Amino acid sequence: MVVGLKSLTATPFRDFSALSMQPLDLPRCGERPIFEGGAQHSRIIEGVEAGFGEFPWMVSIQLGNEHFCGGTILNKWWILTAAHCFHYEQLSPADLNIVAGTNDLISPHKEIKEVTKIILHKDFEKVNMNNDVALLLLGSPITFTDEKLPICLPRQPIPSTWHECWVAGWGQTSSDNKYSMTTDLMKVPMIILDWEECSKKFSKLTENMLCAGYKNESYDACQGDSGGPLVCTPGPGKKWYQVGIISWGKSCGLKNVPGIYTLLANYDLWIKNVTEVEGRPFNAEEMRAPPKQKQMRSQAAEFPESRSPTFWFLLCLLLHMIL
Image (cartoon, rainbow, N blue to C red; front, side, top):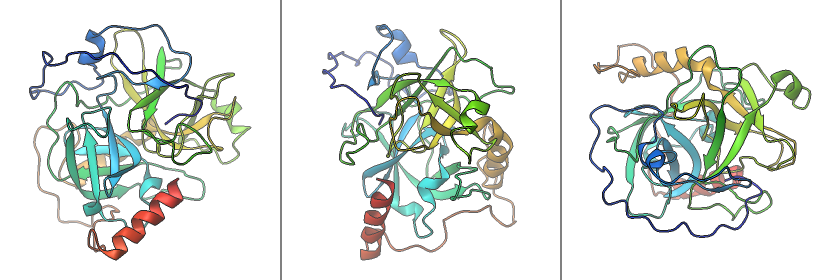
């Protein structure tokens, strides 16, 4: 992800065998039990590799076993991401995999989940990226461990000033090199900027968007990070909340040019309605069968068979357009 990353030294090996790998009975949203229990470091200046267990809600969304967008664990059935990752009408849920529980995409220690439904916001507008939010319904529930935990959604109203914010992803580390995507999860600090000031730079900014950047720095998300989270905490030792979804911007890593994120606080009701309609209600203990009514917009009808020539054509097309 992020532009302007320096070369990184290898992280010293730590023995995590004594840490809890057992399933958790109750998910603890927005907590980082492994990372908080480890050694803490001073604030970084440039983007670096994320620490083990630092972002346990992060997932890689993959097509043909190739990462193309990020997402977050909302609960054991749902992944939250950006709608623009899936605006191709012939993209099949059966061709997608969700990789969870790891910072390293080539690590054998990860959980891989299938997707059964892609649900875009019905008012998503590709021309200006308004309502850039989507949900993925998994074929089987995620087993929560300290490495795989859901993110908290922001409460209303959003705090005017967050104590600390970060973006993370597996996207490009260089804006002019589409082959610079990394298999290691990267992170950079962010500051949420004034909406009115940001709208002077971005004429198509809507009230469903927010801006984040870092003054006099080129910290930014880039291609391959789309759909990933902007997460913030109200104070040291507090829970983490997903404030935004990585959406769009002007190139990558331009100094003093912020990135644009979907303002997640505007979509509480949409998430609640979608998950209830699909029979896997968010934050509900009881799962019920979907009601007999018209389903919300979804790309889960008829699609080209996975691994067919049409599938590989779509994979090449998708990677070309995103990268």
